[in-house]
Length: 169
Length: 411
Image (cartoon, rainbow over the protein chains, first blue to last red):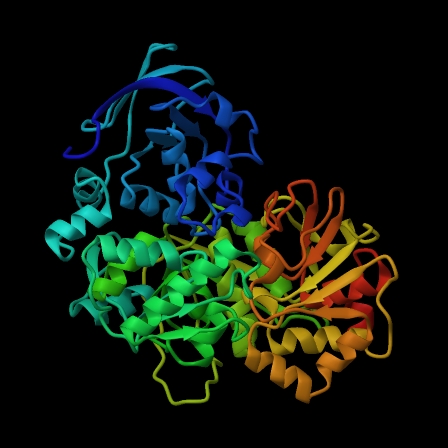
């Protein structure tokens, strides 16, 4: 994948179901183009310690319906800027899912994962394989539609369109 | 093979018959962004090589989420939007003109049978008009403004059929809250919803907008109200589903006995009969938003509050959905009634619903709101609690200082 790192080994930060975009980045902080402002407040209403604990490359793991609510692209931007390299969830709200791919933040849907807080994960984005090294279990993520793989391969929709000028299926 | 409304609308746009599950690149009939999503849209548009939007008459920017600007940072983002709109020859709806979804409908940027893409999650509101309307984020919207197209997967459709007429004093908001409670916040993810049946047929356009608006609270890609009974100011040909259309799920409810509904903190699907929460003390009552800030919503509140004063421990904020709604509420006396009752009028726009300004609740306070979301921190303070209800419930609660059933004031 051109601009995206394809293998990642990092620690998992694990949260529950229905994490809405207001909890990922509260509305009062969204009106900015400054990504560091977003990162400073990421997940603050859910876990005020996240910002202190997250390290570059870490993995965010959640349950069902991750990213529901507002369409704010500031939500995946805040996560990416804070250091999160990939988000794994049982499933995603659709706008968040598109937004994440569009800004080049990989998202993996694993319907039956049982990843625990602090687990060390080894991810191969090309194959969608996620090895939980702590629990010694390997999961396979749902395959993305080809157009999303193509967008992610370019590092996001901006580069995809800069290169192609239009969409192709 | 028969088609759903969504399959028919998308088929007409791509030029051949398509069905659920197919990936398509479709032309769109309109696109808009607000001041939450617009600045990032403009940035992405320029970065991806955009020079001119695909059609300036079909694209719009709306300053509604933080209007007027509460600080210099947001003032500068608003300026960026004004400059871009001028440069592109597209319309910018100024502070106070109204909430994006309301002004798109009032100004006919979207019509029956259209595909409309908005950088706001409540874009499915236009399903009230029999349009296929989806919310997206900023970069997707930038791409649509540049290419005039969107890629999408033709959604499967959930059919929600509601039989029976709503009782007097029970409104479209009660009906959609009830449905969100049944379907849940993730029950329609990636899917379209078709709302049909007797309960929807007599609804006004405003009430249909309330219904379609909260499709997004079920995770839906779009939510379309069956056009039977839809009346518009202009002639239109409606898109109806085929008899043998295929649905992923069908729900059927008899809503003739439905009571007013309340969604309790902190998820829109935490919905109960109002009797479960009657007597809960409130500090703050809010009527407005793309869900319930229209004339009929203000009128019903005025009907309850006429000649009375709201409870001394409660403050009440009114944000009309648009300038046009405000003018109508001024000429029919509704606004005077509400202000005489003790309500405070703020600029038409999203106001306190998005927690940026114009009415952030204090720690420990309880809000009764006619909005569509009660996530923790939604109104700007994670230490407050938000209950959602119909405008009638908000007005009755403001009067009594506690969550109250509005029916006794209406029947």
